[in-house]
Amino acid sequence: MKTLVPKALRKGDTIGLISPSSHCSYPDRIQLAVSYLEKNGYRVKPSVHLNRIDTDPSIADTEKLQDLHDMFSDPSISAIVCLRGGAGASRLLKKIDYGLIASNPKILVGYSDITALSLAVFSQTGMISFSGPMLATELHEPTPYTEEHFWGILTAPAYARSLHNHESHAITCVREGAAEGRLIGGNLSVLSSMIGTPYLPAFCETLLFLEDINEPAYRIDRMLSHLGNAGLLAESRGILFGQFSGEPEKAGEALRLEKMFDYYSAPAHMNGPVMRGLSYGHIRNLMTIPVGARFRMEISASTFTLKALEPVVQE
Image (tube, rainbow, N blue to C red; front, side, top):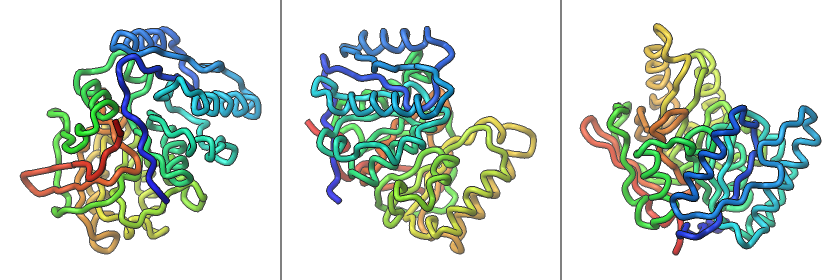
């Protein structure tokens, strides 16, 4: 399948807003994010049902799909940014018009529950999307690091040639080495739930990146075991573990998680380089990662590099 590379954002372009997962209980954040995007020189177009609440999944899904399809079919929209994660995106996967998306490739941004949408879109169309900040979680008050990565990745084709970690996130070399492959991953809970469906991309020759929040070590163990038993860890060329926040911060959980990452990085499970500490997850200083793009990673006790081998946006 040919890789579809969306066009880079330019000042004056219109950014569409959708909410394919949960709603936001703090609507003031939406307006703050809109003001932020406009201040940076972009027009903003909310979807018809942005932040709509409906307890009936059949009604909610119809509205979410309409908004998604409207944004991809609207020629005035250059990029689509999601409201927040939560839950619900995976219900849409069977009903999405992937042909419409493939015919109108454009920037799509979101992480957490949006992992389901990003992975499904890449598996069905080959379109690169972006696992990064959202309206109600980061863009209402982004940090300088989050800003730099967000605008750098989406506006400058050369920016992804060298991505750097935030200084507050210590990098640990679990297994040294170098590898090249397509960046596939996102939220571990969402990704693991997609195993066995046609919407999870092939893991052959990939660099797997993972994060999660509020999951105890035993559940992380169960999900990584699921990936291992499905043969997906063995197919990966390298692994980048991001931030696992919430539960691991409790006493003893961080050490259990560290040992777990070591265990699933052993040769019995996979053979490529492995690092942990990537500036990616439910965190303030968030790296924007191009899902489906070819990258090279190198990790040793003293160095870490992550760089694109092809453009992730085009002029």
